[in-house]
Image (cartoon, rainbow, N blue to C red; front, top):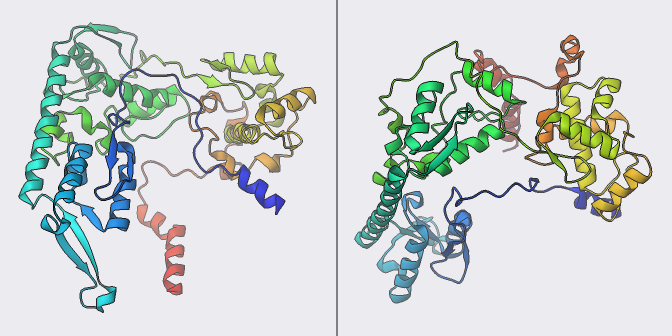
Length: 435
């Protein structure tokens, strides 16, 4: 029983993240402090947890609201109908859907559908949409008239001051990167912040894959012509005015209206793209450094941990280094010495033991940490993983160690063969045979 309790305590049930530096400006998802209230009871949740409340309405009150994503101001919408349901029965407003209508009466259930077929609901949705549109157009006009805009280009060191359009036009003409005409965009600063965060996290803006370092990401975006944003990412919807003008219409159509002449230079290697520093956190304390050399020097001089020496002595390939770092992170997070596996009451106690007993450079047998589970970061935003590099003899060993990580080419032509050999097919067959 004790072992099972320890196993349960060791389990990490949600992603971990290092604390990030505070950023100015509101959340991309709007005011997170807004509350959504249940139409029938005292239940309430934050706006960001709307799915929880919609599930509550369905399971507890058998209520379904149609086209929720098209409601411009959901908190006000919910408050309005909560008041109306106190005045009159739900059946005066909602369509009634009877389940199992041909079955026994005791097994039949009534569900209620609230939608814009009801004139009152349609008028409410239109009013909320009109109010939101007025707010957005007012914000857009402020941004169009604002000459205090100041920002560095995401791809070069050039600095822009004045109107936002100068930077957007620069990125389109000089870097072949367009997010649309300036007059089509609202909340421009938040938009650029969101794109910058992706680049800082070494993420392609189009396919949104994550890469090992800035150079690899830059080459990928150039060679694959991924110098645009992902059209299916709904995170960007709120930054295009057209989404407030016509509900249900996607913003990709905005880019087709962009008539600026874009540079189409295949020789452009984005050599002027400046890497924005991403702070890597030490394995043993809260110290952060902006470069690989700085963080490695800190861990070696401050804690006696030499990752480069371990890489050389053990002949660690890139993904083995990844697993080792994730293993050490996990053990320390769980207040355990990674060298001798002794468990402590707190992380601080474990770290004191590691230093006092000289276990900093003591690693367990490779079978303990060279496991598939440690491909996955202990901390989602662990920038230390981005500083790792291949060992010197990695290329010569690549062929003989190809089993380390399965890789499927981006330009997979024989997709049918891949589907036929997929383990999912076997799972589906097993499921069918069981049923």
